Length: 236
Image (cartoon, rainbow, N blue to C red; front, side, top):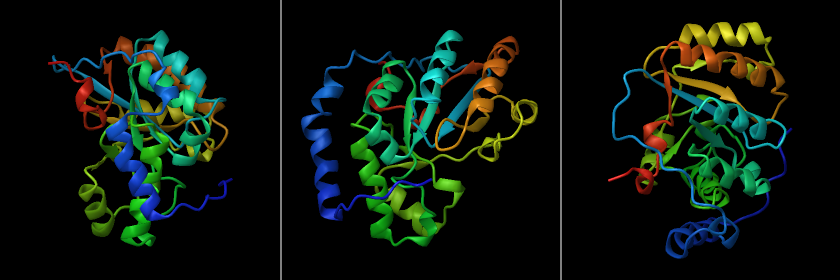
């Protein structure tokens, strides 16, 4: 169920977006502990990129973070703007634990149906909600992207990140089916799409809990999508 979108003019959003990098993130974010460094100095032999869309949510993002931490796995969270606004602590916690954040628009519309100005507003509002902690990447809702959307995204300095494997868990599929599709899509460099928000995600949690030890046994390094890592997080 989508939440109503609060009115925000494009000029206000642009001002917010300009202010964030100049004065830093809000004080609540500044008070948060320093995030872990994302070490990319050595290129892994078998990288695997887990990505989670539509969060954050207390019910599913928090336990997912605990699971990932247990297996020393890093992931990328493509967040809906209004959810990031409503869960600022989780936004900071994701960053502190060394995961990457990506832009998934403010309200999850079909961006191809919007004007360039509306697309910018969807993305800029999310930039603000993520407190300056997101990397320079985005994922279009439902994978809907065309030349118009891509032009706006690139103009804003963002890189579209699609997926090579989809759990289809937005359909609330059985755990066994989610696991089977994820295993089939697993290969070095694969970008796997799951969800940690909007709908019931209990089956996703169970599937990931069972898949994490399997991925580790197969020798995979679970890492943030490189395009979503903030430059300041890459060690010299």
